[in-house]
Image (cartoon, rainbow, N blue to C red):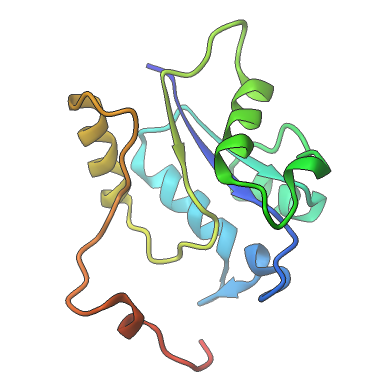
Length: 151
């Protein structure tokens, strides 16, 4: 089986500049996504798609691949995720074979659990679906999960 994770990590956040590399409870945000993906043991490769060499270097430090720097045309504010993922697949495919499964993991998801990824992957494998979203239960409206303060 050929299953890759792609983490799209654009550097141009307007609301929180540098958010992908900011520390969250002592670990850079992107590192949390990488470490969560690695801990599942379901991925053959973990690939970062970024337009930022510093983010690429940090990703490599935590065990991901950063085999290319994303083109500026795919790094703007209004670029959707699908073209970014497609670009990463095409740039990293081996031989002429496309991966059998691709999982997109956003870099700023510090509460994502390995079990969420594993469950989503198992659901995808047994279904006829083209994609699934891992969703966790939350006992209240999602906006109640947020609070203002420092970590």
